[in-house]
Image (cartoon, rainbow over all chains, first blue to last red; front, top):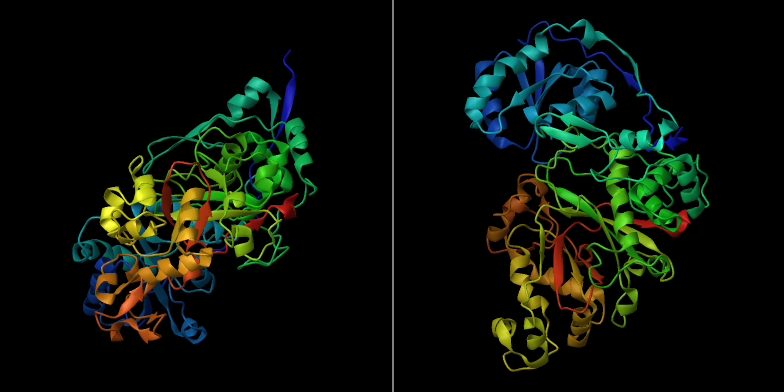
Length: 91
Length: 475
């Protein structure tokens, strides 16, 4: 009978991740403060900004814009007053 | 994704726009950040923006108002199963276990190795790993931590392996070293590589290559001569190979799932060379001394090789020698030194192509004879070469504007140009800016290789993350 071997796992240790529910959704978008957070991809995001503002003018749109890889975050104050965030495009 | 996770946890609903082929990566990232059900919409890689927006604007707004499903409302904990012993059985069965593959759908559509870099490995039995661990004084159950405070690292903090932010014990790194075919004396170098966290490319094609500086290279019999980045040398090949085996196992990096380098790079192999410190011209420091280590200290450089390929061997056989010895041939014609013996500054021949593809500092690997020519020409230190290269990189803003990456690095030209302190948009078209990075020290020279006169130019942001790790700390 062939000899048995025991092998050491080369696989890394994953930390326990606590998972959270998604934030409750909005009942409607009219009258809400919705932030459009833009990272690059101007071909999509310029058109998106324009259409959101023209087609959904009952929303109070705010904008965070960078051409870099990481989104510009909401300030603590903005966190209190922002109802939702659209992130485009996530890199 | 960290930002989206933060918003969702704070009670702010989000929707994210991304591309279909990135689904696996988003799932992975979202789970790691604790919001596995994050909502996202696919944009098109090919439709013009306005048409694309017509298609996605409805789903985007729907994602903000559509009530949550039970799954989306759930909370809990997640941890994949973990065992110290991953397999028990006969050697044949163990071989089959470690050489398993799994089918990865689009964008791969092929089988991908579950534990290896795709090549056969040595099975990491308990006995083999115990033997490998004789190469270090560190305990097998020690969690791998940073060994210094250099760069952004903090000594004593656990190393998080890219991309899943997993941690590892010294024993697990030793298992990877066994799989790559290393000898125990190579383990300190492998642990230094592991300390880097073995970052892998996300969407763009880049790999990493490795270079050892200091007496350790000679001690373990590395090849820093002819073909130092090529095949044949056991320490060069096996130490280099551990990078990918670590990335796959300790980082959980899976092509097409969470590493999306569209084409890949030959350096995703990976390759480890060594600097030939004995062949440095007088006054030229080794990489170790350049980064504040002593000459007798050994370090591992883990350097990104980004995007614009490997350029080299522009000189015909004998062409370089004819140029330096007697001023003959095409190089002499180009530089206007026909008939004039060297030393000549051969970098002048290459410089026009350095910033044709993209901006950024360069790493240049040159053979000892060519380093000596630069020294004889007048460059009495590496720093003098870096300064010369950097000054040569200056170009008008009008020309600089035609690169692609600069749209990002200047924040859409809204940022400040670092050498003038002025906003990019204030600078006239003929204002000169450095295409070679913000400072000369971002260049890098490695002296090594054989006798035939060639040099390789690689892109790479040498000090982007201070990619130097002590090997001695892991002895």
